[in-house]
Amino acid sequence: MTPTDRGELPEIRFLDLAAQRERLGGRIEDAIARVLSHGQFIMGPEVAQLEGELARYSGVTDAVACSSGTDALVLALMAWDLGPGDAVFVPSFTFASTAEAVALLGAAPVFVDIDAVSFNMDPGSLSAAVEHARGAGLVPRAVIPVDLFGLPARYADIRAVAETVGMRVLADAAQSYGATEGGRRVGALADATCISFFPSKPFGAYGDGGAVLTDDPGLAERLRSVRVHGQGRDKYENIRVGLNARLDTIQAAVLLEKLTILDEELAARDRVASTYRTRLDHLVDNPTVPPDRTSAWAQYTIRSSGRDDLARVLAGKEVPTAVYYRNPLHLSPAYASFPRAPQGLPVTEEVAGQVLSLPMHPYLTDEAVDRIVDALEAAAADTAAS
Ligand SMILES: *Cc1c(COP(=O)(O)O)cnc(C)c1O
Image (cartoon, rainbow, N blue to C red):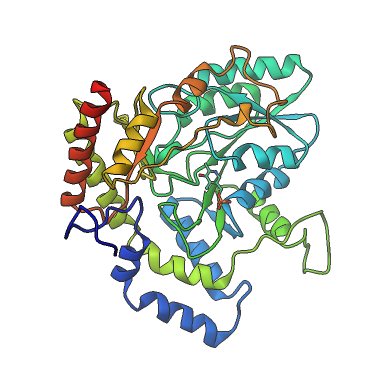
């Protein structure tokens, strides 16, 4: 560490995979060593074991592990046979994958606005977008709500809209594994749910990975087929066009160890969020969790009209922050030509200029949170004075 004006104080990390690794001790090495010794690197026993554990944890019949969260979305849309002429409703205030998977299959991502409090899909904007897409000659086939920053979307309301239209709900739960709505875990809130094991997600591996969760065994069978080149009874009988989208055995072995501490980590994230909320209540717009939901707290994201100044001052005080997402997808070159909700996306456009994510991970100490809050107080005073 280079000497700084923080003196003896430890560095504040935006996320801290090293602390988690230290906590798990030799268990990860042992799990990887077991894979090295049995040698089944592709679809080894740990993959099936992980799928069983994920399904049990989420309270669904099936989990199909795959190569990434993005591929989980592609697999689900392929297994439902979506393509040209189909409309799939997505938020714009999300990571690119949500819309990318749709566009990749030749279907039309239709961008829907969010609500200003949760940053998640606004069911009213969804209804309007469905009518708009129909008017444009598209067939509404699916909606992909995103559980942004770890908070489950308004599934009850979104399911109600989807049911009247006869379209499917595909949850993008890349950021929310372990969170709940109405006492049910993510995975059981939609027709199918995609999760990501990208290392920085709340439930991350040591490389790429993902899974699709569902209560529909027929869908699970199609997902397993698409995952391996559209195989039928075996790899050399191809009954549909598919992909190579398997999860590596070594990543499954790592995830099985991490799953044993996931609940404790979620509780620790929740404690950090409560402390932030209590200490920052008077200072900034804090995220809120409705009483029927819990969050996996992938991010703790505040809103401030002076966001960029605030981030700069915090960086000077060695408090790392991040902006998710500065560029809404519907304004990005790759996606600007796709349809949007008829009233536009004014909330998305406003929020994108104001959000700021603070350090958030299960190993953030009270002392670190204190320093972050102090820095924010000083920064707010600075930026107000300037
Ligand atoms: C991370 C993420 C994805 C993609 O996951 P990968 O495993 O990186 O492919 C999709 N959607 C959202 C909302 C994400 O945050």
